[in-house]
Image (cartoon, rainbow, N blue to C red):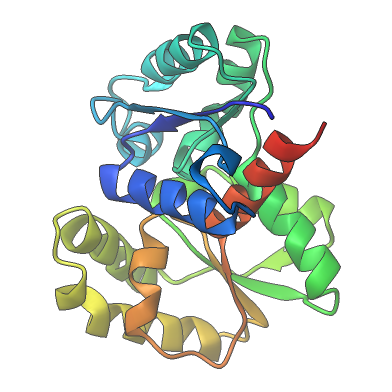
Length: 230
């Protein structure tokens, strides 16, 4: 069994959500069957979207610091419960000698295998993730189109993430999030990607007719499979 290291704290609630999904997905009958997980919850990592959009302190150095700490602690692979942080994936990969399981590729593989007829994807993510092309460039390689969202929808999604989930007010922002989901559906999306690790915490409050890919869950599944592969 391999050890998984989590570069966490971006934010803490999203880190808890990922760990719970790993535990839930693991085929365990007793404590000892579960995967060895090392969590470095490091909320002091600078805001990823803020840097991508406005400059300031580059979070790459703290991300690398966390990655090295986890490698030194015995991790065989790394994962990050923050989609936007994958903009810095190459910085992390260059700094350590263990693989980073990439959240976007986990999602793309699932869509290709389970929803091969998908053409247009509604990506629900931070403005930083969208502007940096964290998803769109990889999804394009898989033959998928990412819908361009109007600025007002992006701004409302950001409010749901930062003023809602990150501020501990998830339920209060559920109505606004439902509006965002409805508007993205009306733009012609065939499928939704919950492309920010705070979004799965909002999804239980909304209704949608579209398949919704939980990026956190896909990362959890891939991590379990990696850890249990001999």
